[in-house]
Length: 96
Ligand SMILES: [Zn+2]
Image (cartoon, rainbow, N blue to C red; front, side):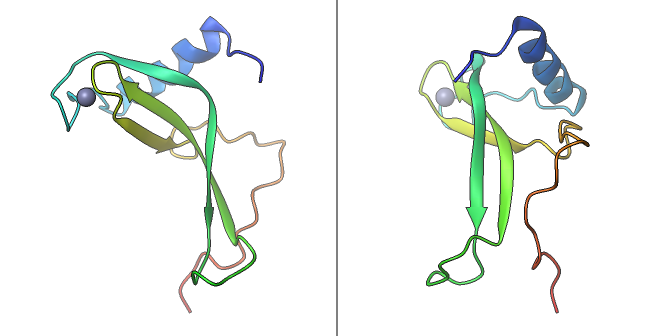
C-alpha cells in the first residue's frame, strides 16, 4: 500500500478536528493520536450466516499513541467519499 501524503493526512486530521473529534482516549485518557495509513473497510451482513456482504463501510483509523486503542470514522460524513467511484453495494440499507 502506498503511504499517504502529508497533505492527505493533514486534510483528514483537519476534517476530524472540524467535527469536534478532539477528546482524550476513552481507555487511557492519553491525548496523542496517530492517523493510520489506509482505509479500514467494514463488511456488513444482515445475519451471521449470510455469505454475501451487503454493505461496505470505508473508514479511517486513529490509534492512541499510549495504549493503541483504535477508533474508526466512516469517511462519508467526513466528505471523503469519491464522487467518481461507484458507491459500495448497499441494497439493504433501509429497514422494510
Ligand atoms: Zn489510549
